[in-house]
Image (cartoon, rainbow, N blue to C red; front, top):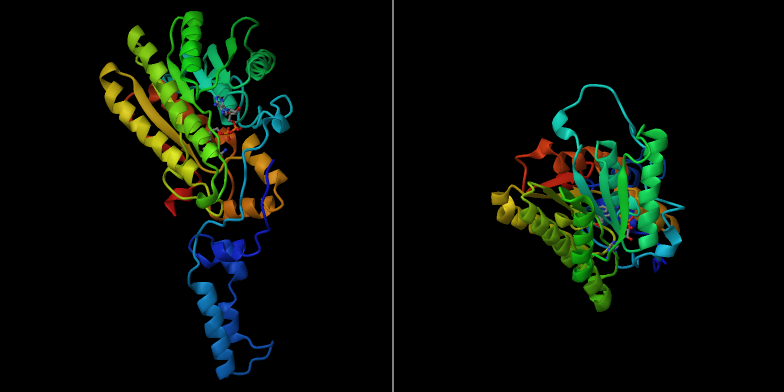
Length: 375
Ligand SMILES: NC(=O)c1ccc[n+]([C@@H]2O[C@H](COP(=O)([O-])OP(=O)(O)OC[C@H]3O[C@@H](n4cnc5c(N)ncnc54)[C@H](O)[C@@H]3O)[C@@H](O)[C@H]2O)c1
């Protein structure tokens, strides 16, 4: 359950004071120019009192506090039962051009013949990625997530959707669900073994499973911090390592993609999330380090770093927060493209990294953030 401790009356003002970060808000809220020219609606010249008031206001508005976190934005990880994928898969299954098309396109972007594994794929970005692989030609996809029933349902839904709308023949797809906690090394090993046995090879692995919570650094519950690192950092490591072990053993020149975040490169505001940011920086650098180690075997490892995306996770946070509307507006104002990303905005990026189109791309981080980190 999400809880923000108090409303955020000063949030917009704080962001607005960073006029180069949030020009729209700054235009709306900055009163300094008005004070310099208008005085109670009359055109009289400013006197000493006016000037002092103007100077005081300018000092308040145009000097720090600049961009910074707000301790009151405390957001525990939402209870998973509130967002069962049967009610909300976390993205539009028809968003963008879904299904078959007949125009010429680069063959290197095809996922045809590739066995793909996606973690965190019962909902959200992972689910979108699994579907995107099928949309781009893959027939063999393993859907991994915490709960076996949710994985099975997600796999069945993908099969049913493409048979109905994507012109795949019944039996053409083999999409299987596997319950697997990526923070459990043994479970990851066992699951990859089963997938290898089922499909005979593993070509593409995307680790999308991950969690985020928001607490001020001084108050972050240690157990929660350990859990976050166990999933985001160690889980990414276990998944990538198992993927590489199978690829190395089978001589597969595969592609591994670790979902990081723009938070690997910037400190988000206003919500405090130091462990998450650090975990994603670790994921990004882990991808680069693996890339160097496994390049000699032709295995490529990259990270994908989304900005603020509207998935079931972010929607739950925004919908259930009393300040959700303001939070969303703040995020949008800080993003040059002026909006949150739709999950389908990641489709091209993930296919590029997973397919042969990126045959000479390894150890890189692909940011898809609407320009957030360019500011
Ligand atoms: N949504 C965003 O704005 C955003 C932005 C940047 C990065 N990301 C990253 O993208 C990834 C996916 O995020 P999302 O928004 O789709 O979240 P989500 O909560 O909608 O989906 C994540 C999935 O991972 C699963 N999961 C959690 N812990 C797991 C574990 N230990 N083992 C296996 N599965 C587990 C969850 O059950 C869930 O189905 C995360 O790594 C997240 O940090 C998200």
